[in-house]
Amino acid sequence: MNLGVILPALNAARHLPAVVADLRAAQPGIRVLVVDDGSSDGTAAAARQAGAEVITHPRNLGKGAALMTGYHWAVQTGLEWVFTMDADGQHLTQDMKGFLDAVAGGSLDVVVGSRMDRTADMPWVRKMTNLFTSWVVSRLAGCRIPDSQNGFRLYRVACLEDVRIKATRYDAESEILVRLARRGYRIGSAPVTTVYGDEKSSINPLVDTGRFFRLVARLIFTRD
Image (cartoon, rainbow, N blue to C red; front, top):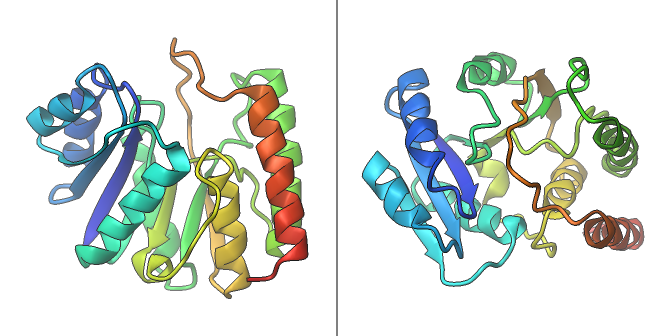
C-alpha cells in the first residue's frame, strides 16, 4: 500500500523524534510529512533530523490550514492512503492496523479513530463535548461518526483531490467529514487509545465552540 502520514505540528520538537521513529517501525516505507505551523522551538529542524519530510508555514495558520497543506502534499506525491495523527505522541502507532484492516475490504474511504468505547481516562467535559459535537456532525453528514473530533484518521487520497474547506482551525476536522460524506464517500471508524500527556491544549473552549457553531450554521445553509 502506498501510504503516508501527515503530522500537523506546533512547537512539537521534543516529541517528533520518537513519533517519527515509531511510525517508521510500525509501517516500514511510510512517508512522513510534518507540517510546521509557525513553530518557534525548532520543530522543523527536529522533524528533518528524524527523517521526516517538512513543509513550513512562516506563521501560525491553524490546524485546519496545516491539514490542507498536508492533503495537497498527499495528492501531489501520488499516495493512495494517508493518515493524519497528532505530533505530540498522543496517538499510538499500534492502532494503525485497525484502520488498515477497516479499509481492506474496499467499502470505506475514510476511517476516523474513536475513543468513545474507552473513556475511563477521558476528562468528563471533553467526553460530553465529544458526544454532543459528534451527534451534530453525524446528523449533518448523514452517517454515524462516534468521535468526530478525533484527529487520528485514514483517508483515501482520491477523496482529497478537489475537496475545499473554509475552516482553518480545529473546526476544519468537522467540516471535511461533512463535505466528504455529502459527496458520497463512505466513512467508518476504528477504536483507538489516546494518551493524555502534560501538554496544555491549544483549544480555546469559548473561541473554538463559537467557531464550531458558525460552521454548523454554514453547513446547514449550504450543500456544496
